[in-house]
Length: 258
Image (cartoon, one colour):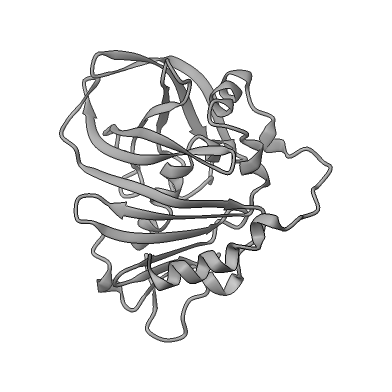
């Protein structure tokens, strides 16, 4: 475990036992269609997600064993990612990278900064205001039929409201088995579908999260060769906010990035 991860987890140790004041007004995110609620219920006590303030986890890219530690404020959606040779953050106003832009080899720092947080947090994150989940026609993946839910976004919700998502339900567990999605961040007219497989769910304080996500191209109801695979561990979902300093752009050796 890296030293930064150790220090962060030590800071969180007391948070699990802290008692916060609960708002007596029901959160509107709890008001979901009954069919979607059944999917959420299959993942545990999803009200814990609604009540949570912070999420952290460790992630490994299985293709090259590169590691990352992710920290997210679930209310403001500020993000901090620590990797071996770079740090990325969103302070609520801008996305930054340290020590310099070329330390990160991806096409867009902004696109990447919350990409895996979003994937990892499905289906819970689709309870967000401005997101609509509806039953759709069943979908086929590699010859197997799955119950499907279509996800739609309100105008100006997120960076890419034109994205298309379908959640496919495992018929045995009732949990999310596949995510079919398009990426319109770079091209709003893009309709190419991708598939993301959710596997090996693990409990984290009453909610389950996938330990492994595997990405594939998706065409004619079938997946192609594996594009990428990431694994997750040390998942902490807590009811207290993280220190705001965690998300602040360093005064030195950091630049604003798109």
